[in-house]
Image (cartoon, rainbow, N blue to C red; front, side, top):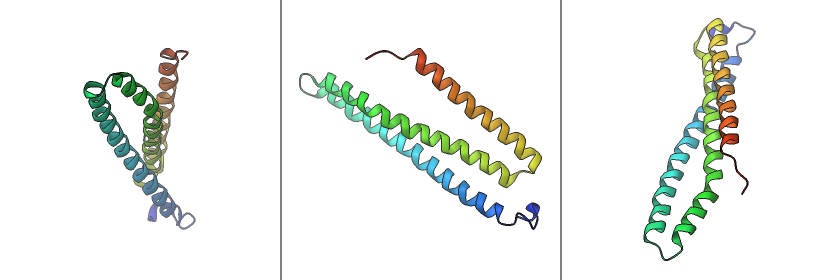
Length: 127
């Protein structure tokens, strides 16, 4: 807190507040994704292999319907993780290092988004 000077004395406290919100949100979202995908993997497979006739289609359709929820939660968790890194570098590093590390993090987030768009377009199809 001393490094910020008297003019910005409340800034570290605000940064810590947002850091904890983003990192806890990221952690919870990522745990939720693991739980969702595990549950879907177990239940859909069981239904497809052991269910009555037509269960394979029911399981496949159910997985398809659930994928948006998993993707959105995963994207939120990933975004919150990146946001927490952007905040964290300003809490722990000197301003020069923090600016460089934040730039690298923002560049990485931009590349992740560009890769998402590229892959989404490559595998898109008209249903």
